[in-house]
Length: 137
Image (cartoon, rainbow, N blue to C red; front, top):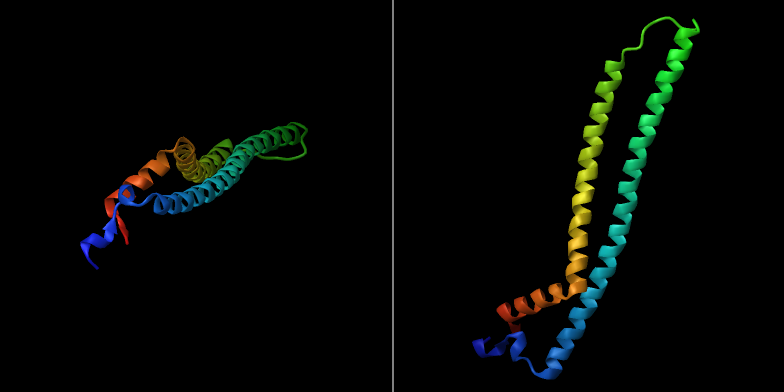
């Protein structure tokens, strides 16, 4: 292979550029659809985490309320140690926060990629790279 065999995107003939442009657009369109699909799935998951936290809070409130009613009604003996619940909830929140933050970061990356495709920035960067590496001719 000779150095003369490699052309940059800007050096391609109009017909050659059209082929590369078409394939590039097909790839960007497929990526856009894939990114949007996964973004929607992540949004749904993040909403589930929000619901999970709210449900956990509601369960804990009911638990304490029922326990207090049973205790004050003389139906049970003992004392409820709320600090145990605090530790459990703190550990749950740490785990859920870590999971949530990871998925939120991935969603942010997908948002950026979608934005770059929609604005034409992704295509511009690809063409820049094509000009840097060239094509075998």
